[in-house]
Image (cartoon, rainbow, N blue to C red; front, side):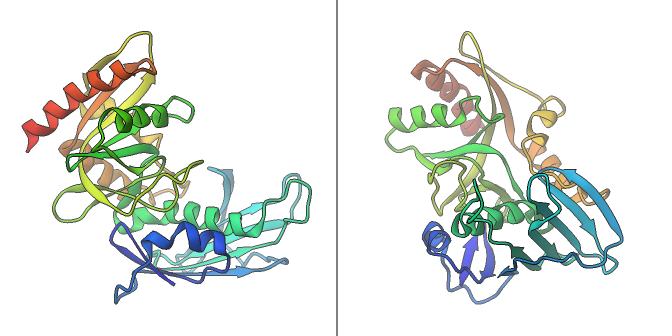
Length: 291
């Protein structure tokens, strides 16, 4: 099956109805293929010979191979039994994913859920190879302008953007947890994708990235514009990372371009409607001035 996500044509052989349902709005008949992903079920995963091993970081163990390809794998907790392995070529255009079936074990997640979630995790890792970033944020569109609200999990991103959608009827969700940022030739845009955290709040739409808001809980509603150097650490920690030295160059380059062309704000706020109006008054004025 072929899907178009953030202007990337992705071929993947999905087996389970859960993933097929979650991705149906992104199905495409686009002629070319940018990324080809093969998913296999394998209850006896054996790691190929590798040149470099980096132990568990960012939810995976990591491998580098002699041909320039990379890999990531995960084992059963307190065991050497490999339950997941992915390998991609140096251009991240060919990807193989292997999954062991652990649904029969106590606490084991079903294969249909794992197929969908692992596919999303691997795409987050390889998208920087294609000049795209996944920003941990809740993204919305209002009157054709896109806004991303980023913060660590549990801060209240979804609560805040839900309030936007209730106050402004023309406000729609792009993605509630992991929108994709990509410069499509017209500037940086926010794109929806099928993976949206604990919710299914996402849409196959895109909008110009007008502002990024770094959200934090506060005792009153205060918003201020912050310069690129100050905003960098806020946003960098909300991007998916890999531990390979030199492999972050593309991500750094894209993020630097984003920060030099996009207004970034810090919003300290309460979970109320006033936080929305205070924020909108500031970032909307900035978006209109940039048009």
